[in-house]
Amino acid sequence: MTGHRLLRLNIALLFGAVTLASSGTARADAACLDVNRSAGGVVSACTKAIGAAGADSRAAAPLYNARALGQRGAGRDDLALADFDAAIRVDPHFAGAYANRGDLNRDAGRHERAVTDYGTAIWLKPKFARAYLGRGRSLFAIRQWNRAIADFDAFLRQRPNGAAGYYYRGLVFEAKGVRALAEADFRQALKLAPDDPAIRRKAQAFGQVK
Image 1 (cartoon, rainbow, N blue to C red):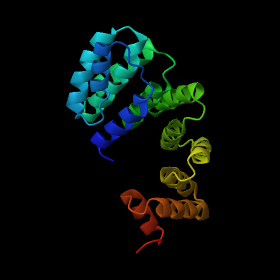
Image 2 (cartoon, helix red, strand yellow):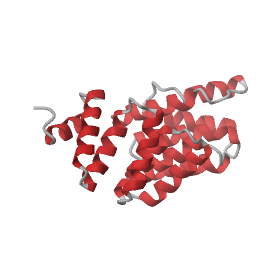
Image 3 (cartoon, helix red, strand yellow):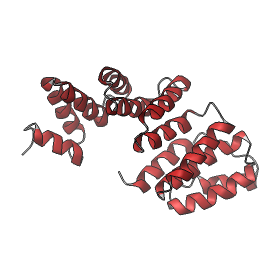
Image 4 (cartoon, helix red, strand yellow):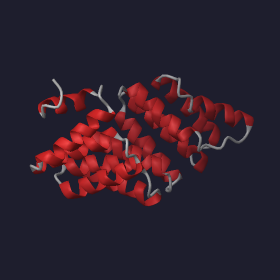
């Protein structure tokens, strides 16, 4: 998934949760949360929207979060981290910001921090499927395999057609040497996402596709 598609997806997920107040603020917020904008356009629009909302107001939380996603799309993860921190500072109950900061920390190899962020997101929103998936990936990276499997199981209970859950759980089973379970998970992942390159490569390694 490209950075721009990821940006559009995450902004789309938070868009419906934003309450737009005055007409001026509404226009600024809508521009910030426009999923069709480029990463740079999102950053610029969100900077204006944050100014209109008030930098320390809770209403600015989704705007900081959206700007952080824009910064990530532009490859500026240091600025994205600062914006996720700001979103959490003005709204400590914003589960999405914790999960997004977890993604950033995971991608940077800061897996212990990522696990903490995902855990907070799950505590705030117990059925947060994406946070279970992200935490499982970080737990796998630090070789906490049984906990990772538990998180992928939790993800799949909520998203039974989530190919990523089968794929990553398969990786854990493979690492643990449980080949039969790994093979079953990779086969299911391939069935659900036959065009995914990583899934196809793993399926080929297991002789499931030519």
